[in-house]
Image (spheres, rainbow over the protein chains, first blue to last red):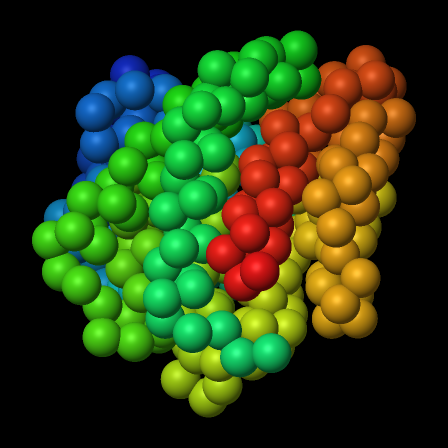
Length: 122
Length: 193
């Protein structure tokens, strides 16, 4: 089982920018992102999230998001996806960075989740 | 009462008209306590619903609600997309069993609560749904009672959604999702009258 990361943000630039930070410490972890609405306005898109799930070569995905409605669309998309999706209500930048670094180091999921637990803020 | 396909179609048309007419007002309500997009997002969504229904006429209630849900889920960028989308998706699932209006709406409300995690008193659309559904079931729902339920969100402190980041400062404003839900129920009353 290999794991990937999906970032979901209301802002296209935020979704494109954060993977750059993660890739610095996790060059082998597949990271995809979905930012903004279908028209690249501020918001989130189930279609874009589904694409980020499909484009990510990993079998199982850890997902991180910015604000509330991104979570709702993430949940909708994960109900429609065949891949197992894990959703974390954690501080976006810090927790995605932490997960990326730990995945790169080959740390197992339960241990990663234990590290993410204190970063839960929503 | 059972909801007929033509009544439900009328309901969605009337709701779409109300949203279109009030989109600027809804976005204004969303300005002090949100991201100022509720009316425009909903208008875009209901326009997509109209287009979808014009392209393919649904055969039954379940189909009508499914098409409505998919249009809202894919076209509304804000929280109202997944929330209203889930409401119609749950009604679509329920419509496969029954077309009884109250049980359709109960399924919708359960879906909204699950999707958004909001409870009564959180200053969201849930407050209106919770107030309206029992009245509708008893046959005592009126436009005035709907207005009352919408207005009742004003003094509340928001616990969910973008407004919750404002804490105490969210007091004194009508919740935009409560307002659009008010339009939804007024449209329903008109459609089944």
